[in-house]
Image 1 (tube, helix red, strand yellow):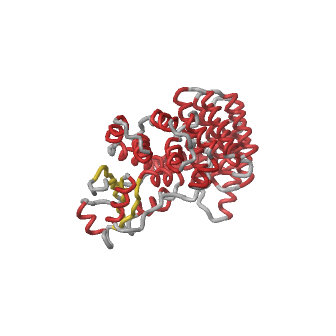
Image 2 (cartoon, one colour):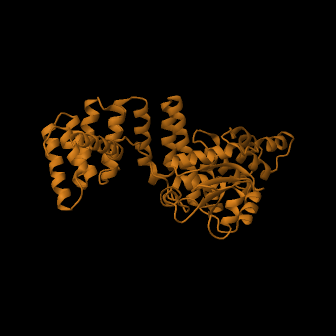
Image 3 (cartoon, one colour):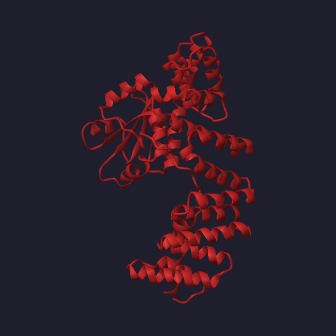
Length: 404
């Protein structure tokens, strides 16, 4: 019996770690956008292929059934994600097909769909470029789309036209887009073309500027900012701000890759073009950068500012901040003192078990065992008053040597 209890406690410990203790990376929120998540096409499969041919895109098909649990989770949690929507809407004609209704059975037979969900990436000719199955989180799902795009590399065909002297705006745009889709550099082509143009506010030139704005540390980015009014008039403020945000994020990633602090600062400075998002972007990217590069002083300074200006009334953000301190600097006294402070603040805002456990662990880590036990015991009482299970809290107390 005691052996079974130990096994149960170990299982609970693993669940406890992944639910409450695994470190998270803070991300600045996506800018508000007219498109939240994937915008699915509502026409027929044939019409989707025609649209893909016209726009030079692949078709992404979510082959699902109504009774499939993983399918429902993708629809509820992943497809509505802003980053997923931005990537898939830009690169694919997206359709959902119930494999048991309408066109579904015929398409299921044609593409040998045997499990759900199945994700199909198809050329405009209907041929499979890439396919796989199974639910996955947002980042992995975006990576899946990137894999499909790499197999749909049409940049060589456009390169021949371009190098052969065909510099029509529509073809240049298609060339740049094809390079971007497969992760090849496109700035040289964009700069060459735009340098030959006298009027950058022409719609075709604005389209090229938008497509070419992939990084904040580029001349093209400056063109986008200089022509904000025309871009917003042609598209929308949401589209303009989304480009600004994504370009700045990409430059931050480059800063991390090259350990180049000046690139981080440049990206942060250029985020001032979206004043409403600037503060959160500045602090979250500083936390990521200085955490990854091991600069505890600058990390702590950014963490204090983030806690005071952004997360002060948001227990989830305060908890995530504490977990970042653990992830990067769990042996640093100042960082862990801050983690304890933000954990206390989160717990004062919400007495949910997650925040109780987080605060208790911070106290225990910082050598305040009796305070940690007191906090968790109060959490047990609070949970019981709401008829909630207390296994996680009980496990933590047992782990600290407290008899239950």
